[in-house]
Image 1 (cartoon, helix red, strand yellow):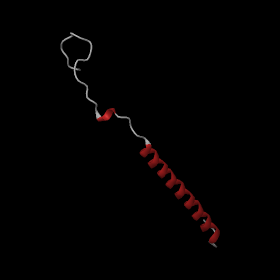
Image 2 (image 1 turned 60 degrees about the horizontal axis):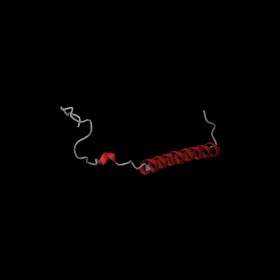
Image 3 (image 1 turned 60 degrees about the vertical axis):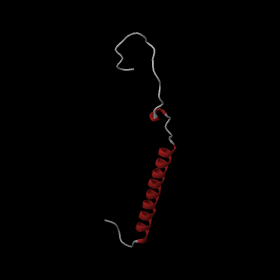
Image 4 (image 1 turned 90 degrees about the horizontal axis):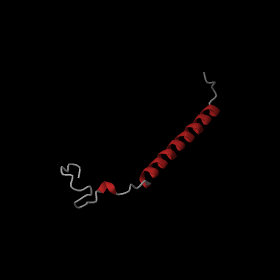
Length: 64
């Protein structure tokens, strides 16, 4: 009771309602999305390193 004007009682007098924001947050989805993004970054990094190694080994020209 934020705007109570009388100081008759220090206790809450009224009915309480459960709000949807009072429920605990499920952290499974953000963890799965983060793990998937980390996996994609690792896959791209490995593909880049493999492609760079093949390009330098297969070409007959010297890089400048």
